[in-house]
Length: 245
Image 1 (tube, helix red, strand yellow):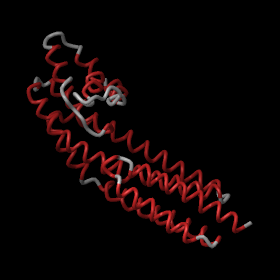
Image 2: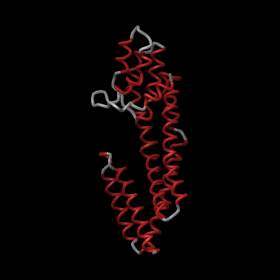
Image 3: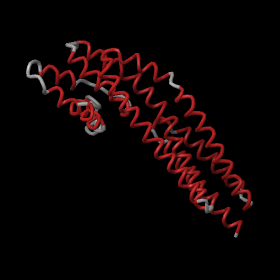
Image 4: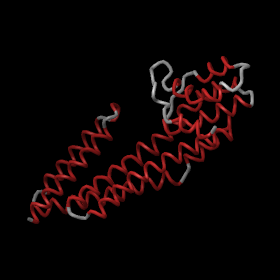
């Protein structure tokens, strides 16, 4: 059962809509378990069909909790739990993944790009591999943990969510992001300075940062910032290669 729920949870945003947000995806993930008993099946499906929205990687908490609460005949509490879980799950997931882990993976990819163009192929592949594998291993672990803890705790999932907010991972992700951002920018500046175009690096980075800061509500800030870093990486490497040549 856990394997089926886990695999189905990957599609929780497949049918997202304004009326119930991810409710159809949650219902689809729960269908095999909700159909096991004939008595009260309609009521169970209607409860699972209710409005719900959260970070996609943490939806396993509410999927697991729903199964556990339906087994414990706590269906009436389910709607309140789902409403109360929307903001905490969204905030924890956004902070860990969108604010820390995704930017860190992007910076590692940009650093790998510079190293690749400079001829350090092994180091470049290591940076890119760590970024991709680290992101996916962590997000798969969080998905599985949420589902398992939801099945174990039921209506008490808030206890595990609180532990997740205080997890050392939140602190270390921020530190690693700052560390590798510094390494990337330092490497970029050195390459551009060799070509005598350091002003281009400064102006480019300043423009990308200012524009990204002005666009947070539209969701463009992070893609633009990481895209700008990638362009700066190409500029740095190309100018550096030109200078060496």
